[in-house]
Amino acid sequence: MRTERSLVVLAALALALTAGCGGDGNGGNGEKAPTTPETVTGSLEQIASKAECEPNIQTDADELRQGNCTTDDGKYVLVTFATDRGLREWINEAKDYGGSYLVGRKWVAVGDDKVVTALRGRLGGTVEAGSSHHSGGSGGGGGDEGHSGHHTG
Image (cartoon, rainbow, N blue to C red):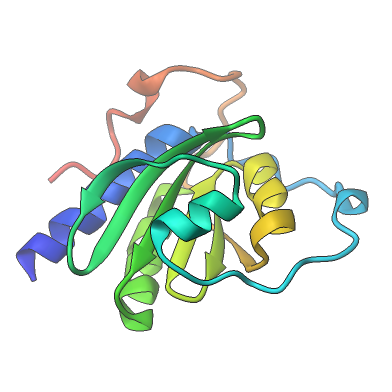
């Protein structure tokens, strides 16, 4: 159980670094997604292939597998799970870090809104939003140093 929780924290930290603190991009660009394909299933590599990504595997455990992807649409984290329950528990914890989540059956892709929207056009799935835990932030991109206060411990 401790190993699984550590994996959740590591994956969530990876997504926080990948997704950034943008969080204000929930705008209304509804004209780009007229139809959503049927939600894909499969292994991490099969889903990544459908997303046109060669994943850089970061975690390879029984409970979950995680890979980082970079495509023309941007960077994101792709995670597959052994169980539906594992997926839901991971999302419930990871949402505290913000970001946008594209959720399929036993998999999730995490990135900013633009990336998740583009992926949904290839992978199907349901979009879920993480918590908006930043109170303002008029800055632009910013670096990783802005994340130093995230859930340490």
